[in-house]
Length: 246
Image 1: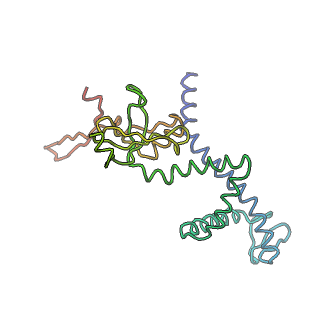
Image 2: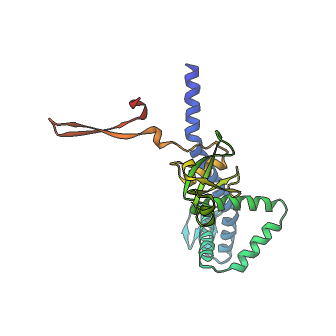
Image 3: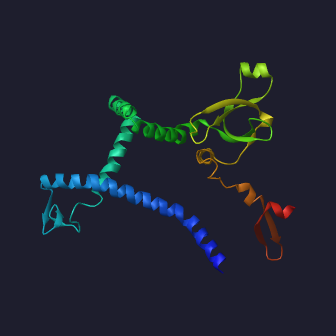
């Protein structure tokens, strides 16, 4: 009884922990951002007589609000607008000198530069390298019997194709936990195993050091079986697992 209770608790924690962690991080970020900018914006609006305080309550343009210290959420909304504006500037190619100055400043600050570059590399791996990777593959490397996750970047052509006389695939083998570094290997097509996992799932698998294992859709349902009831003209569709055929 007690062991079953423990198993249920552990299973519940494992299922709910990602959602709880996500809510906690969002709440923490909201609190930090809104507390910092919200107080500043509230004081600025008070100076501009946009809002007034009467008996400890804030009135916005003469309208009563339930807030007393600051307008809750205004700092967070301003942050979202600021991020959107910066993103639009980057896409349009404007303000490159300012963005370049900010980038160089963070790279010159001790300790902060390592954090800055690490986060930049992870974001670069998900945002840019994901588009250059075609498939997640499995190759026997560095020797037979040992398998390494890699990403297909293209097919070997030109001089490589002529010299090797083999149909090779360009495979990038990233390092763990930083997938932005790695090395290129040219593997014969028959020695490459294509995986069904997406590039994003492959990146998560590598960054986590194998802790985050993508689900295997092929192990759940192999194919669909159908049964026809000719008397009632009803078609029954059911899923058949692989182990049913054994």
